[in-house]
Image (cartoon, rainbow, N blue to C red):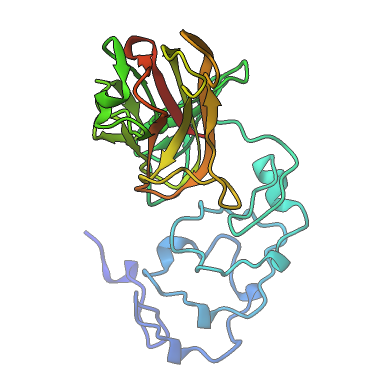
Amino acid sequence: MADYNSFKKINSEAIVDDSIAASDIGTGQVTTAKIAPGAVSTDKFGSGAVSGDKLASTLDISGKTVTYRPIVDGDIAADAIAGTQMQTGAVIDSLGYTPVNTAGDTMTGQIQVANGTILGSSGASNSGIRIDAQTINIRENGTDRMSINSNGHPTQSNHPAWEASGRGGWRYGNSYDGARAWRELDNMGWNFNTSGGITTSNNCRVTVPIAGYYYAYLSTYWYNDSNSTNGYTHFKIGLNGGNGELSGGRTNHQMYAYGLRNNYAPGIMTSYVRYLNAGQYLTPLPYFGGNQGRHHGNHSYWCGYLIG
């Protein structure tokens, strides 16, 4: 059993746990000389006991080991680190390359992308430039509209164009509702193939869907069965029911089989290049100088396309 002498007397100078408050210690009274090495450990401090206002503005940590934790979200405020606060080349050394400024920059090297990648605007993810191995494609809404392959061959989809072959045998002027006059070849029975929005009407008219320069071509097989010299024909391509005026207001019509008696006129063909507005139409338009001349439907051809 313990006796009285085994206890030490507790007087007013004794320190009891948690009994010393900040107000009990004067400023600068506790110095390093008054604290034994290792006497103050982390278990001696309550959570949050040492705050920034209890530390001097300058701390000497020479000879001490400082352990850092990783920087996490929220440690650095937005725009807190300016370029002037970083050592020259610090970002380049850390990344291994020079970053490109998205607001505008100059590059000296090549950007390489994976096959099938589309370079386009943020608002149209299925439209832009698509790289596929050695082929470059211009894509619109998920469809390649223009392509250039490794041999440099350009191709286009949905390009306005048409071609038509005539049908039937010999046709005189009265096959088209009249003789000595300009006549649309509307009773030919043309067999059309079209693309790119080209539409046809009246069995011979071709209406273009978009403005631009167009090339059109017409050829046929003609026979003059007249015994006089006035059996002839003109051929041209009409515009919107008119004469197909050229620059300066002149009309393009070529004369064939004039003075040719009871024989075939060689090389009945004419072509036309003109700027057309969307909705205008072209039509093959020969002139029958009487009813003795005739052409052959099965040997007639009518075609054209958008140049650009």
